[in-house]
Amino acid sequence: MSILDKCYNYTDAKKAMAMGYYPYFREISSEQDTEVICNGKKMLMMGSNSYLGLTNHPKVKEAGILAMNKYGSGCAGSRFLNGTLDIHLELEAELAKLVGKEAALAYPTGYQANVGCISTMVNKNEYIVTDKYDHASIIDGCKLSDGTMVRYNHNDMKSLERCLQKLEGESALIVVDGIFSMEGDIADIPAISVLASKYNAQLMVDEAHSLGVLGNNGAGAAAHFDLTPKTDLIMGTFSKSLASVGGFIAADETIIHYLKHKSRALIFSASLPPASTASVLAALKIMKEEPERIAKLWENTHYMMDEFKRMGYNTGTSCTPVIPLHVGDMMRAFNMWARLGEEGVFINPVIPPAVPPNGCLIRCSFMATHTKDQLDMALDKFQIIGKELGII
Image (cartoon, rainbow, N blue to C red; front, side):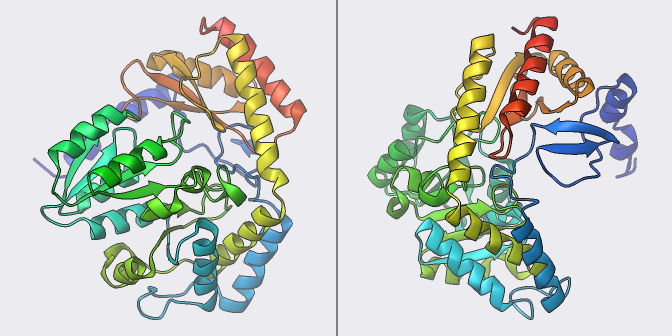
């Protein structure tokens, strides 16, 4: 028996490849825009998280180039030692200002921000209370902590209160996505905040998909509900609306100071590269100076949602630019993915374990830069293929 046997015995992906139903690691040879070149074919991108369409903005690209020319390609060390640049500090100040907190701390990825924060903040005999649909990075942060994870039913406040009642008198951190990445719905932060106060728990909101989408100047879900003061920790990513890679935690200065000196994911990782840092700074500036981008994103979102519903698609509880089309079983999801791909539409099928059995969906996500003609072209394909497969 070898520890490597599991690798050689794993055949699921190869079976899918042989059947022509393998939707992962598709090769893109162009910039991430409303249209991409995928496996040598021009496709309409409807599966990107670039909500504001800034990944190819001239000012964002120029900022990255200038930073690389000035600082080089990397920092060759962690933030803790030799890897803190002046632009890291500038970025953290801007992020704190955006989300209304005293301080912020940038991590090399959004995944590391969640893992690093949660695993550091929650110790033995303490609890992390999570929504069952929270992102995998939150779950992994719970697993790496010495605390105990307690899960409540998705966006179910009665379920959350039952969990908190059992933990009354214990130290607990509630961690929730602002916008849920597959369902496209928004966390009931007003109700969660009330329960957190009632049971003396702290609250952390993951704004990965809500930055640039919700709130004044795109500050996220906590700001959208005017509950930033009631939110103890705010997490965000740079890989979606902010057009780069990385993540951050924002909180009171004392909390950020603690994370700087205790978070292993920060201390033992190389720091965010200069080009990425500068690109995020440029994206933040554009997001603030061009609020029409967020307005256009929502215009496109409402248009697509209305049209999908008119056709008869089940969009679940979504109310954001992440719009799932619930199709049921796995083969139906793969068939729809394949047919849309043949027609030049890039989307993402979502299957277990990311969703429950027979809860498979087609995950669509929209950008501020999608044109009406592009949306209409896609809708035409969705209508034809949806009828062809008996989904609508």
